[in-house]
Length: 155
Image (cartoon, rainbow, N blue to C red; front, side, top):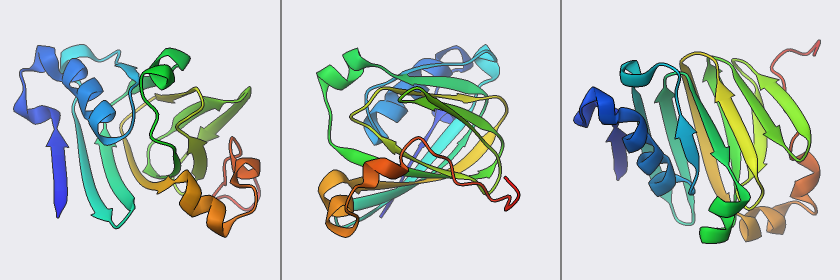
């Protein structure tokens, strides 16, 4: 069954705060803000498969910060494989910075601080994989983290 959460159900002045709740409910505790204020709109559609989930995010320009204080509150150990279908994002994790565009991917660990800045509207697909599931299949998944995979073979 697909769960759909959207900022369209609240008043424009409440959208960014509601989005922060949507992100926290679907992914992890995080701080979210947007420079477009009341014009901000976003939707998350999530499907669950056994112990993994996949989410489609359609969202306006924003910043998401997963801080140490957020991790201390709660951490359900997961890796996120983020595929950008449209738009651009700048990710910062473990002193690495990656700019992603359409067709690019990045692997993030929700038990580590990170930030994501979406300069324009984006569509992303995010596979949520429990740490133990990915570690059962890859020796050291952490080696792939903070390195973006580019759709551009020349990159």
